[in-house]
Image (cartoon, rainbow, N blue to C red; front, top):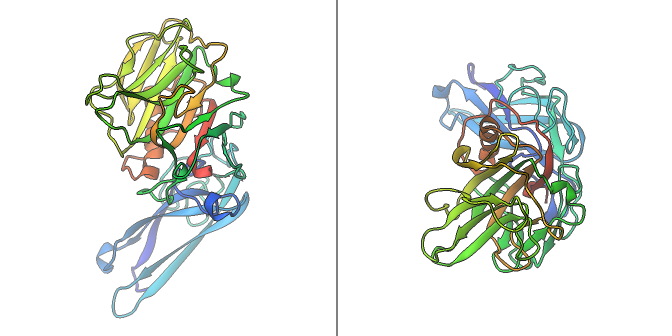
Length: 380
């Protein structure tokens, strides 16, 4: 490589179980896979005819030590040349923190650390060279597995052609679970009693809806009902007026017979065919519930009594026994057994955004509160 043409920066962004790509999973019939997003650049810019930066993915195939090797070829005339840099990483079991990491599997100290920059940087200066890139568990047909370690696996109901795993794992086409809006839903039973959170809870969803305006309908993303009863908390898109007035909705019951009103909702229509980060938080301790869209608080209401669940309630994703089925895709669904604050919600949005092709600043913190449920299409 000509003098002065060097790889000058390496970073690992969002290293952890919410990586934005994967390989050897599901459809190609191979073993476990998990990823980290890598951002690197070369300099000086004036010496290159091509772009001087790129984002790519590292694929964790099995738990244990591995090495990332990055190569850049300079096609600058009169002759091409290539420079290669390698540095170690460590793939850890799902839910296990790497050295210097967190309970969420984030490697090292910060995401997007510069070359040679941060504590726990591996050879070549990558953030968290000894940190946590989590391996996916083996796929179980017909089951969307809970990655929280709490055993709340979701059984896929009525999934046929066109439903289930879709996507290529790129930011433009991320892996997602597709629901047809007709009869698909996922049932989190048995063993879902740990999701009956009464005083502190957060519902977090990366969602891409195909909602049809002009149709009176309820697009349920997550509910706790087993029929017409009111129970627990929910997140949905509702268009009760049968006109162009659909809205994001979240709500809860404190008596098991009716929903507390007013609901948490938003002005304006939810964007169709667009990835959105939906978060609803519920805290009896704070006396408030909040709704956030893409990291921004859009509504809050009082919450003065514990959330109540009916004896027959079953938590479901994408619909209910009686209908209200969701039409669209889910990338990831988390339920936290704590109410995230505004800074934590923003950090979660920023951490997940690159996976869905959304440009956002890197998060300055990692959420370490306990997780009750984690469904991720990347590991499906």
